[in-house]
Amino acid sequence: MKDRIFKTVIYIFLSVWAVIVLFPFYWMLLTSVKSYSTYNAEYIPKFFTLSPTLENYSSAFTTVPLGGYFLNTIIFTLVTTGVMLIVTVLSAFAFSRLEFKGKNLVFTLFLALMMIPNELVIITNFVTITNMGLRNTFTGLILPSVTSVFYIYLLKENFEQIPNELYKAAKVDGTSDMKYLLKVMVPICQPTVVTIVILKVIECWNSYVWPRLITDKQAYFLVSNGIQEIRENGFGRDNIPAMMAAVVSISTPLIILFLIFHKKIMAGVSRGGTKG
Image (cartoon, rainbow, N blue to C red; front, side, top):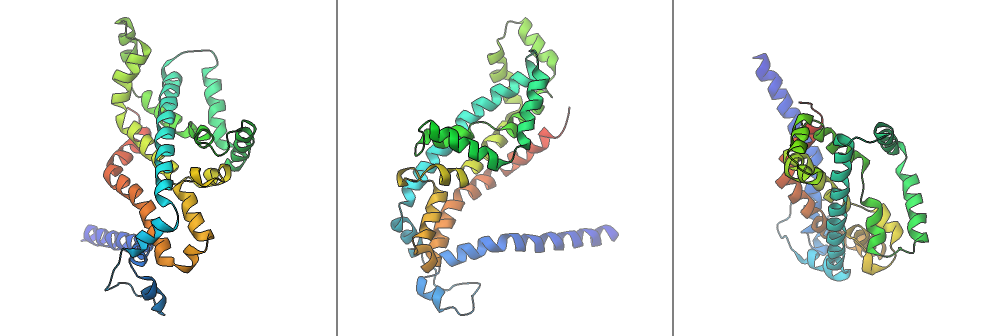
């Protein structure tokens, strides 16, 4: 009886918490399918609508070149994630399997970078990219995001869980380091690799401060810039339903991505926190 009561209380608490967390998303979706006149006529907001419309989504894409921003974001996300994955895998392998002088010191200094506030890094990156003449270029957008200390640390911890005897046996058989990495280590740690890729995709898709800082030409705007532009040109302030339609359009790919791969994300993160 005590267990049933305890579980009932837990489920009630989780249900209430889920409603609180999901309600803003529901309200955003509801507002996006209300017409402009219906929304303005509601002195008291209603939690449903009897006449949903997709006109706001059309307005959101025609008012600003949101489709072009989507394309820029996809290019930025795919290239940044691909380069970051190569850097992360090679760095994690070097720190976990290769032996070289000062490895522990270098890795300690590498982890110390996580203590530096992001604001200082952004300022340094901005000065560097500007001096290199890479403002308003995809190269300038991508370069500061191709490495992550946290992802390297996470993958290194996973690589170290693989018995070192397997690596020595592979070397005895004449297997190169690159072949061992790609044929053995990466497949074994696939959940973590997938987790890193998904988290990086989400990070790139939601990136706002750096793209906003380094680009002022519309040809290089990402979706985050597009939302701000909608708001700043007055359209988002006057037509809230269309603004919500733009936000729903931008958020939907990430929501779908998480729903598809949420089990792999949880598995990869939990694997990084266990040994053996």
